[in-house]
Amino acid sequence: MRVHVVAVVVLGALGARGAARAPATKPAPSATTCAAEKVDPGAKKILDGMETAGAKYAAVRADVVYKVINTTLGDSEQRAGWVCYQKEMSGTDPKAAKKKTTPAKFRIHFATLRQGKGPVAKNEVDYAFDGRWLTVAKAAIKTVTRYQVTPKGHEPKSLKIGQGPFPLPFGQRAGDMVWYFECTTRKAGKDDPKDTAYLKLVPRAEHRRQFDFDRLQMWVHTKTHLPVKIVSRDKSRNLTTVTFAKVDTGIKPEARIFRIPKPFGWKLVIKPLRQGDNLRP
Image (cartoon, rainbow, N blue to C red):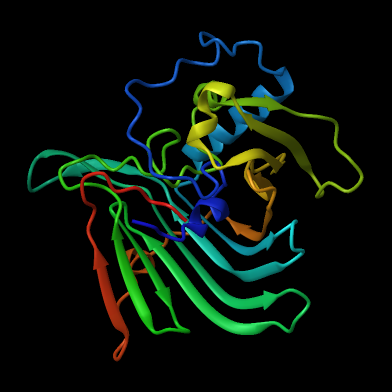
């Protein structure tokens, strides 16, 4: 099963168009006990801040610009819109008198498209993930496609690094990040976004097959500890740049934001997850 998961890049590119892999057999060791314990201290500080941000903010909304450049042909595509994310929530179900977990969710809405140096045109594409199903709605072809991501009966882990296809750029355990990536930083440059710290992630040799990018750069805001810019290079050397603006960490999104109903007259396609399926771009 092949799915265009632009969501992966927009929500962090840690799986940059990566496949849904089998869940990790065991959690990654902490940053202080794993083989990668000689992590750059500056990078570790940034990772710790991002982990804290993931715990602090229940939901985040931001305007987003997503651009892909084919470095071989020189072609480019740029989309603009907004993204909203709600973290996993735990509570107690009063009816069942037991713990209830609401999985992490996201919504991405692209309103415009610009190809190359052409004009900006209206071209609506929506992605909504409710923890189990990824819905993709394309206005140009009037089609809504629902892809099952999490098997029935399994706990949703789709946004956790190493366990699903949509790992986020914050909220991950610093130790997990060090386990999967060589993490480095540098001093702020004159062209860096204002008030940001630079972080570079390169998949470790033993984990390279799990990621479709060979390098990822992030600029993380020094106060919110959220990424404001991400640049990834895939194994074909295509460059993807994602920038975030008007970041709002105080929102309380309604449940309907993460659902996309089928408009009248549109085609609906449902693709359940089958044994051996993989989510590919």
